Length: 496
Image 1 (cartoon, rainbow, N blue to C red):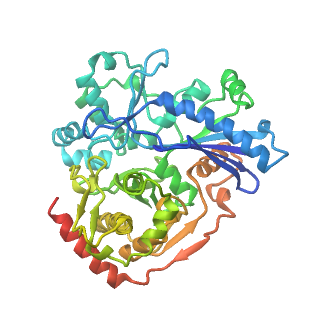
Image 2 (image 1 turned 60 degrees about the vertical axis):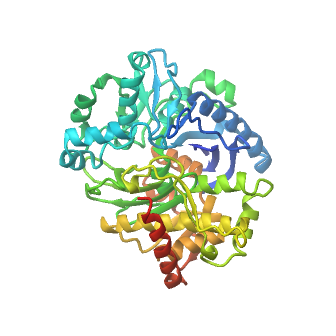
Image 3 (image 1 turned 45 degrees about the horizontal axis):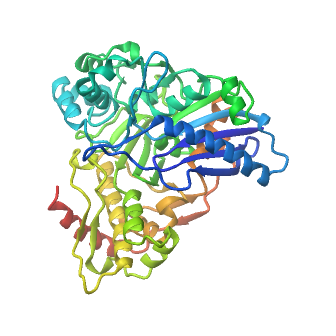
């Protein structure tokens, strides 16, 4: 019996096939072969087409079948028992009464709605927002919808249902539209005190409650694969979609980070540290954000405190594309390793991907500081970029420490920037926290989530019975990196 996991990333779609009984991944594929573009009609805007995601999901599933037949000659897609979906958080998808997409999705790193969220924060009241929503409305999905209402009234007038990216893919698979408390909380629509969609948010922005899908548990039946779609994808009709979660809560699930005190991190296009707590806690400035975790219920709080840095892997991608166009990431990592810690005085601030929450939604841009044209090379830039990203994680973790998150270890997947020894070493020593590396993928976590939602695993822990770290990396040079971090932070202070 197999489980199918789909991960709707910003750069790629990933699809994994997992053997349910062993929890082992048989094969993972990604699609397309080159990174997806982000549409930016104006500075600070970021959009992608939901229809592009859907086309790529279909192509990814077909590609998965081909790879699975090679990896496992006995593979039969009829043995897939459930489907799970992970997705890039906070994106706004709008459809009309016929489920037709009305505009491109305004995605997570789009900054156009900052002023809408700030005004709502002031008008509804800071204490009210923080104690009920656990956040400022900030630049999240509710504020993005308010921007559409104000600036595209013809589009807004046709809205029948609003969704997050994972809801949309589930809709295309099944024809059904559902959401969850976790999804509504990441959009800043959920009132934790009243355990309902926030009346204050609806009333302030003038949203009608009818535009929201039915609310279900994260682990539940969100629809059955339609016959038409199944026939086109070489799948059996009627497979249930039993799990949907944002990429960061899903990453935490894939690392078995589900109980209070457990902490996960990722360093993909954006960078995240995600810690689980059991109280309705929040940062007074909303520099880090609190959302319902995948196992949150009205009876038992499970709140994910999320540090998000927009400019992380996208900086690494940028330097690869424009500084080292003939190189690959492995070569970049190797070249970065030839330069001493500190990059001979070259510092990079990796903030060129929209408003950063850790700076109260300021847009400060990416900066390259202290470059010496006679000394610094491409290798220096590669190392300075990865160190700058690691120092940004330290800056954000210090905010989380102010909010009583004190991790003793951080669990990460061996992927993206954590494939780089330079970055991993800088991350561990800058933060002073050991890292446990796991061989996991977000799409594998989505598959295991589907197994939980389908009842194949009786408890969450059963889905991770054989999950073990492949390596643990301890801090060894904290004094050196403390000094380098303070120097980097001094340069940062000029921009914030």
